Length: 157
Picture 1 (cartoon, rainbow, N blue to C red):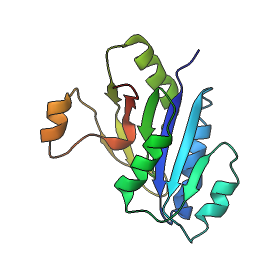
Picture 2 (cartoon, rainbow, N blue to C red; picture 1 turned 180 degrees about the vertical axis):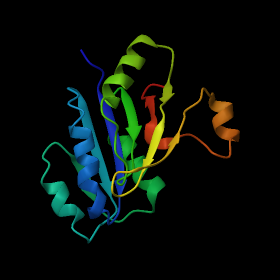
Picture 3 (cartoon, rainbow, N blue to C red; picture 1 turned 90 degrees about the horizontal axis):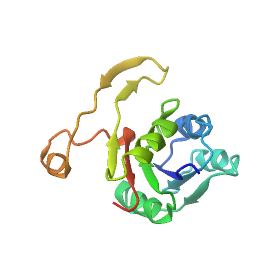
Picture 4 (cartoon, rainbow, N blue to C red; picture 1 turned 135 degrees about the horizontal axis):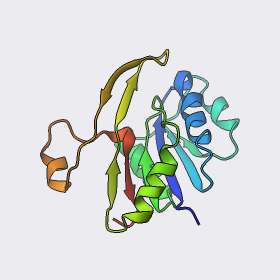
């Protein structure tokens, strides 16, 4: 049985990007996932887009910013593995299968970070950030932090 993956997305007035975000999750064709979208009360058509996708778990209400929205999404997540991509982020093809395969054979590992490609609105590659091995001390002391859209962690960690 595949590991269930929860993807949390926070959004506010991101109608321009949110459908591509949703499609990047659906196009994974991964069998066991949930996509949770926490919207902060958009007025730009985002809600109409969210309503088109019956698989989504979403709410739209004012909140106290991105961290508050993320916390609400993490609380709703039921997957064994959790990832967070912003509304203008896309998940790379095959990412969920790779993440699940990694966690399936690395039982004592609680997080994994992959490379990140930064693309323009038109889909052109701007830059590539290469992930590196790190531990909790490195995360808390690095000025760059982690590559958030390509970081996944175990719920039980």
